[in-house]
Length: 164
Image 1 (cartoon, one colour):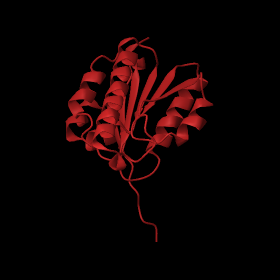
Image 2 (cartoon, rainbow, N blue to C red; image 1 turned 180 degrees about the vertical axis):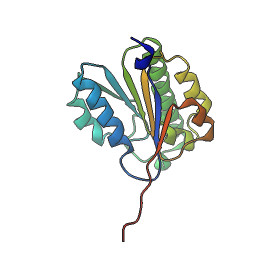
Image 3 (cartoon, rainbow, N blue to C red; image 1 turned 120 degrees about the vertical axis):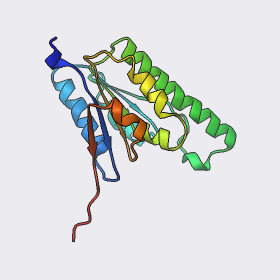
Image 4 (cartoon, rainbow, N blue to C red; image 1 turned 180 degrees about the horizontal axis):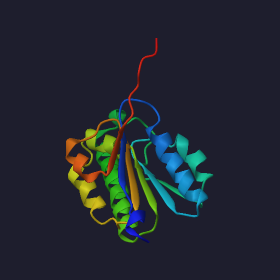
């Protein structure tokens, strides 16, 4: 591979719809060219899991949360368990990147886990630090922590506009 093939870190954020869809579109594009894509979701319900599992083995899909309930409705003990599950997902992402298991890793709604104080921007930076220069990573979520701006090669702000 030449340096022209160097991977990028992209962030899709904003209050508009389509961040996860854009990331999935990239995963489909990779799968169509026999490249490996892995999607790890954070703070998303299990609904999309059924659909996503139909894309395997071309696109591998992981969800580490165990509860199907809204996080705010959980007991303190359940919240602590779910936070650990989210950390496990982040640790898995680090393993995926360090072993170069894929060409594209999508951490869907990981920025929301930062907004909810389940993980920190520094923890995400730590995960990204083990990435091969040839591996692409996409992070999605509504809000972009300022500390992550310098980790990205490309930032896309998806805004909802009112149409009259």
